[in-house]
Every structure is written in structure tokens, then in C-alpha cells.
Picture: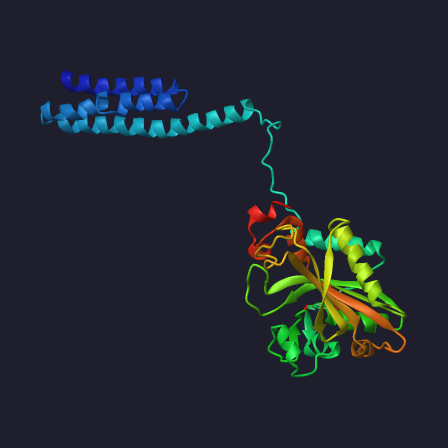
Length: 348
Ligand code: DAH
């Protein structure tokens, strides 16, 4: 081997030794990057050896090339291996050194809340409970015969058109259009005892959705049956309810109306809080908002329930908790209730 040969080969070996030594001193990724630039970058001695191949004597080229390749590969392998060790060491150090700070505040989970209608329903339950009413649950899927027939809606009578109906595939079965069919169930359940119940729940009507009406809404039905129950009892009960629900000086008014299952029948309005009685889109510019229908239970309905109308009388009412919520909170559009918009729901 010539002197020139040994020189270059020795130099490459020396570079390898120096580089590996230097690598062991690397402490972090920055050191590794600097090392890489220095020993494997364009100007690194190994790379320079490749450049010099051109000038070397032809018979030396394979030897030098081989050596240079060997050193370069060795350095690259060392970098990969040592780089991994540096990363692991750093991770171990940070796990050991940086203690988990459990005093840091955690992320607040979003807290749910009761839907405004549910809140109103609970308020209604509370008020009527104080007045001696119990809650009676009835079904949302109902027989046509009970939703209409037992409530004195004759078959094919135009009164059925007052409530656009969702029928099921079975024409005798429908989604209840109101909570009034619960009157029949309650009478059958309590007969022959006197009755004082409220019947809350979801009702469905296939009607155009506007700011006042939805196809799905809650109702709370009121039913009192006993001896000597009068229209005066009805008005007194409703007025008492309104005063407890709103304020003791809230005005109400009754307007005669027609319902097949009550006689006489009326609708009850409360003063529109949204406009203070001046008139707005919600109260149809009347200053009053209808919140319920009511009346004395029709003799046919009492009879269907098993009560002899000669001996018993009763009153009933059906109110809309969404309407009541609108009044209490000055909500101008009933569609918010099913809109599922948190900006609305979080206000209650
Ligand atoms: N069921 C009626 C409706 O949804 C409301 C109603 C009116 C209920 C008069 C009653 C009543 O109990 O007496 O339109």
C-alpha cells in the first residue's frame, strides 16, 4: 500500500472515530442536527473524500470509495441509533422531572339543564299539587275512538277538522291530537271515586308550523269530576292557577267557544305580557294570549267514562305549557322550543 493510500484511509478512520466520539457528547436534538451538518453535511470530510475520488489515481479509487462509503454508512447508522437514545432519554427525564400539576384547573364539562318547557311543566305540577291535583299519565298513541269518539266527536262530524290528525298505518290508531282523551282513561281508572287530576304530555297535529303553532307540543289537561262541581269552581281554579303561575294581579278573560266534549265551553286568555296588552304578532294584535280551552264536562263524556251525569258533574281544561313559557319569558316564536339552538336553551 502506498503512503497516499494509507493516508487517506487513515484520515477516514480518524474521522469516523472523531465523529462517533462527538456523537456520544450530543445531549439534545439541536446537538444532533449540528453533528449531522458537521459529519454528514456537504462539507463533511467523508463527503469531501468522495469529491477527491476524481483526482485520485485510478487504482486507488475503489479502495478509497469503499472506505468512504463504509464510514458514511457507519455514521448514518450511529446517528439513527443514538438519535433514538437521545429522544428516549429526554422523555424519561421529562417524566421524572416535570411532575404532573394536579392543581391546574381541568376543562369544565358542559352542564345540561332542563328544557324551558320542562321547567314550566314542573311549575304547573307544583301549583296543581298544592291545589290537590294528582298527575295522571296517558298514552301518546291513541285510538281514534278515544281521541274523538269517547269525547263526543261524532264520526264524520266537522268538529274533527279542528284538529288535523297524524294517523298511523292503522286508520283506527293515531297520535293524540290533544290530552283530552286522557279524561276518558282517568274516568275509567278512578270510577266511581271523585277525580281531581292533571294529564300532561305531548300532542301532535298535522298543521302548518308558524311562530304560534308547532306540529308537536305539550298540553296539560285538567279534570275534576264529583258531585256539585260548578262553572264557578272552574273559573276559581283557573284564576287561582294564573295568579300563582304569573302574578297575583294578572288579568284573565273567558270567551265562549265550542268544544264537543264540554258544554258550556270557553277559551281563556291572559293579558299578553310580551306587549303589555298593546298588541303584537304573538297575540295577533289583540293584547290577549289564549292559553287554554275549558268547560263543563259534556254529559255524554261523563257517561262514556262511567259517571252518571244526573249525579255527577265535572269541569275540564287543556292548556299549552309552551304558550305559558312564551308569556313568562317574552319568547316571540314557538319554533325555538324544538329548534335545538343552545343560544336559546342556555338562557333558561
Ligand atoms: N283539547 C282541546 C284542544 O286541544 C283543548 C281543551 C278545550 C281541553 C276544552 C279541554 C276543554 O279539557 O275543556 O284544542
